[in-house]
Length: 291
Image: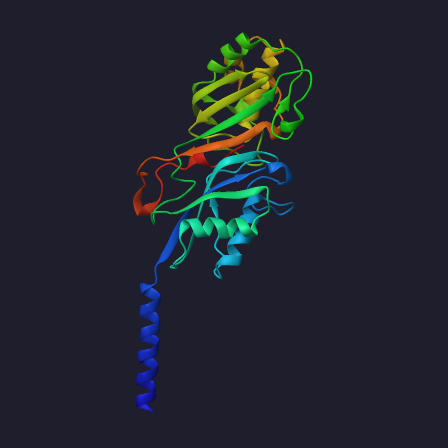
């Protein structure tokens, strides 16, 4: 009896030590998707989020069914070319190239993993992000280009580009962007954000807006683009932007541009992310709301 007890204790000890020695691996994914068929990035109670599709593919490969953590929360109908996400799994021999191929096998054609790489143990796709770049596409011609009808806003009227450029420049800097964001069903800690770039470039009828910042409020990019385009149409003077920002009231600013023209283009990370005590990030507030 004693021998059986010792054997059982030895077995439990070996199992426990093996569990302790088993390390987990963290992978970083770069994901692109056409958001037309999805209710945004996040898993949804009603409808389908892109995250759900990727987690379903992960479950086909890993019995642990890992949870995916994304860098942003894109809204219904918004696209991405540079969504970053991470997940953890028990140690395995899977390399990044094979992982990306395997995930794409299980994913629908409108969602693609562009790359998969091993990530440091402390990496967090959302909390380590230091900024993002969104791009918005406007087709400014009487006839819509049918090849990009799902990824650009058709604005047929002639626009005052000079006034639009003047207005775009006024968004750069640290401001309270409450007037340009849609309301959430909860109180925000702060609606102050810093934009480092807000401009557009013209290539024939195609206008490409570039908006970069440390964080974005819900539908903020679309509120900015919609207002700039309406300034181009003569509905507001560019000088009103300062007043709109100061009033902190969504009703005083311009329209919200359609979701289909917006793309999460890139997420920026420091070379070595600064993290606070116990591995927690130093600043979280600005990374919690997105387009």
